[in-house]
Length: 199
Length: 240
Image 1 (cartoon, rainbow over the protein chains, first blue to last red):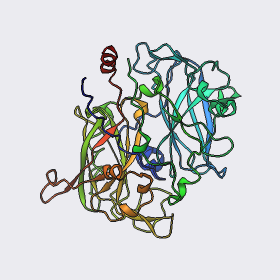
Image 2 (tube, rainbow over the protein chains, first blue to last red):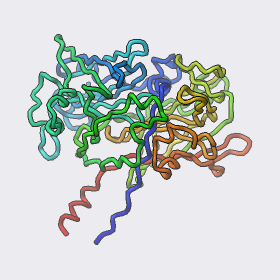
Image 3 (tube, one colour):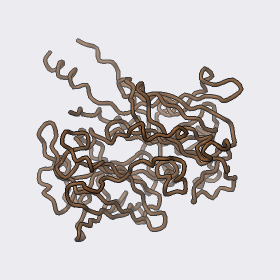
Image 4 (tube, rainbow over the protein chains, first blue to last red):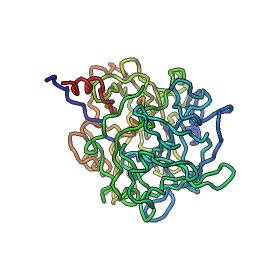
């Protein structure tokens, strides 16, 4: 038998704390002059193929209060279902977005291209979705979830189909408000607690 | 082509909530996380080029004043290496850091602590790892500070780290502490990590070999990101 070398343990996470904007969003925290080139945090650029959409929402705690200090990051495929770096992927889609809860209202909003369904190496079909990662004060390690679309074909999606309770699966569906705008709220606790993933 | 990520060992990470860390009580999911193998969404990820990084981006002593006047405080070098769980260096990994100034005050509209701002210190830095996974920052030692939690809770001296690997599923935000700080063992945020040996991973040792005489001290902070499964090896195992 070949000996498998032991795996190193991952470095543990810690909360981002309430001042993460200093390091992650300096431009919106009065630190814009520190870096000559800001980090690219827009998921899609002019000329990207597909349907432009706006995702709006808030993050709620267990008391029903909106978080004012959350930061979110999303990662997605292009309209054809290809991730940046894959052959043939749309060069106008960076796929990565970083956005934050408004410090006064708690609302977030981001513009992107609606992703296409993606395919895994094993042939599995994943319904259109964005991977979402959330950090804030009080969140001890970044939370992973997904944004799917209530008006898309979500049949047989390997992630949604593992959620036994249909009501809980609904927490991952962005609801169309018309004219390309979708609502996606995140509930950290409570009756509508969002499904979070260990993935 | 992508490879499956090694499943996260949740025991390596903090628990979602402890009562002593009050902010976590209303912000921790109560339902179990839905656990499954990684998918393409986690196995791909954004990549950032070295052209993003300016010459002072990793120098917090100088980047706020663009080199005109150094920040106040004890000059330190923080350096280390990012590897995956197989011990292989992770090149081209974006690291962003942020911290309080030498007096324990953040340059943030919501930090009301009465310690002074340093006119020469912003508090953010970033870099991208070299071909071996190595990185370094010049900064000043951040001050400890009190925070609204239990009565008279103080955060130990710390630097926040945000790290990207090559896959979105490797994303990590953590904090680095300093060897010998007596506040570490009193901190409820640290205590969300319940495995003592994992807490120790976040405590950077003094590294006199990298310190510079009559100039700065050094601390070494190595980071291990989630790895990918070694699929070829697994295939060979299947054939045995």
